[in-house]
Every structure is written in C-alpha cells, then in structure tokens.
Length: 113
Length: 116
Image 1 (tube, each protein chain N blue to C red):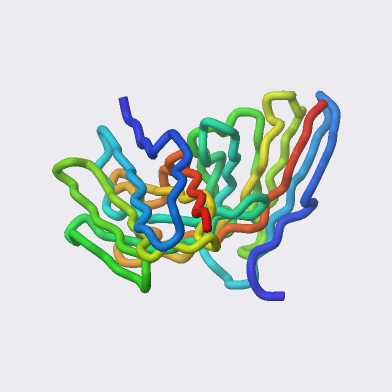
Image 2: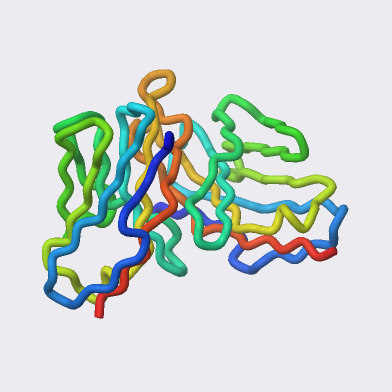
C-alpha cells in the first residue's frame, strides 16, 4: 500500500539546537517533495521544495535532503528558536498525476527556551 | 486584499442540511484545490480544478460537489451534511510549473465546520 509517514510523536527541542524531522514514503514515485509549516488555526505555508534529482536544498536556517533510494526526506532547522514551534508537513508531488499532492499528517515541533 | 480567502471561517450546521464553503483567490492561479484536515489523517484532497469548468475528484470526494465557473472562485458544497464531514476545510491554489507539475500551493485560512 502507499504510505507517507512523518514522526508520529511531537518533537521537543532545546532552543539553539538543530531540529530534524523525518518524512518516509512507500510505493510512490514523487517528482518533488515539499515541506510546509502550519501554525494552529492557520493554513499551511510553503517552505521548501526539493526535486528528485536534488540531494539537498537550503534556505536560511532550513535544510532539506531527499534520498529517493531510501524513500526519505529529512528537514533540518538549525539554531532553532521558539518561533519555529509549529507543525511541519511534508508533501509528495507525484509523477503519476501532475495535479495531485499527497500530504503527510505532520510533526509538531516545540522549541523550548 | 490579494491572496486566497475562505468564507465562512466557522460554520455550525445540522445533519442533512446543504452547506456551501466559498473560496476566492486573486492571483488568477489556474489550479485550485479543496482539502479536509482531520486529526490522524493530515490533509486529504477532496476535489481539484485545473481551470474554469474543469474539475476532478481527489481522494475523498463522496458527499461533496464543486463547481468552477470563474477562475477566481471554487465553491465546495456538502449536499447533505453528515457528522463525519465535521472537519477543517482548506482551499488552495497554485500555478503549474515545469511540465505542469505544481511547485507550491497557497492555502487559505480554513473553514471550521461542525455538523451536529
């Protein structure tokens, strides 16, 4: 069966440390993988996109890796801050359908001061 | 204001009633999407539209109807609401990137629907 899984437990990190979130998928062939941030009561906000032929992408304190052999993406926030506390969603954009994106259920990240 | 808006933001209705959730975007994006978000399920696609008058089913379309007579509007109708349709509904829009693949979606603020 097709699945996309993120850390099921909430992640609690000390401020200043690097937070690492995991997204694993099975039986999908994604063209792209995206990461979104969602704050309580708000819609998701796009953060980063990485293509299947890219290994790593960076944007300020964010870094995403994409391993199509392991079928896994890692999302890193370096020098984490309490303002980074939110739920982070990964999403696969599929080759099989150019019009659909499959979302993971998200990982809640809490950064404590 | 520019962007993507949804209305109403909160709605309480009763089982069996028809409910329409509105979505409006000002970017002239060709693609629009409706998702529902429930605990433990993440975001699930209900319907999407590639352009005006073109719509297609997503993962969970049963009990919902959409239309898109204008590019900027994409209303979602629950024909006869059920308790299982209690959820948070998000509308999103995007423009196709290379080879028609969506590179990013822009989400509205959501509508919280409670069906009693």
